[in-house]
View 1 (cartoon, helix red, strand yellow):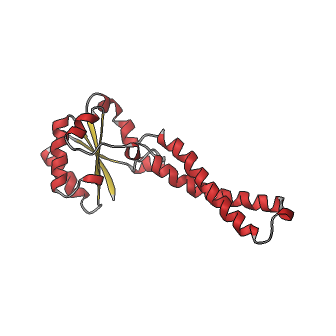
View 2 (view 1 turned 90 degrees about the vertical axis):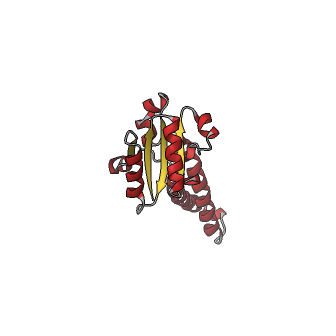
Length: 178
C-alpha cells in the first residue's frame, strides 16, 4: 500500500478528483484531504484529514510499545534482583509481564505525545500552499494500482502536483501520517 499526495489548487479541482477516485473504488478511509477550509470540504462530503493522517502519532505509538515493553522487562528484572528476598519465585514471571505491559503503555503514551507534534512530511513541505488555500489530498492506493491512478489524475488534471514519501524522507524518520 502506498500513499499518494495530490496538491490541488482549489475546492472544485479537489471535488472532481475525489469523484474520479470514487469511480475507481477509492473512497472513504482511503482518501483524506487537508486544507485550511475544512468546512467546505465537509460540506462537499469529502473526508477531511485528522491527526492520524497529518501527524506521526500512529507510527510513534508503535515505536513506543516496541521500545517501552522491552525496557519494562529489563526494569522488572532489575526490581526482581534488587528485591529478590521480598518477591516469591512465581513472582518473577508476573513481575516481568506486568512491567512489560506497563512499559509498553508508558511508551505508547509518551511517544504519541511527541508524535502528534511531528507533522507528516508532505504537510510540512506544502504548508505554504495549504495556508494559501490549496488542498492536499492523501490517497492510500495499492502498489498495483498506483501507476493507473497517477496516470488518470495527471491526464485529467495536469496542474495537480503528485507526490509520494521518498526513501530519504522515510530513512530520516520524517513524519508519515497513517
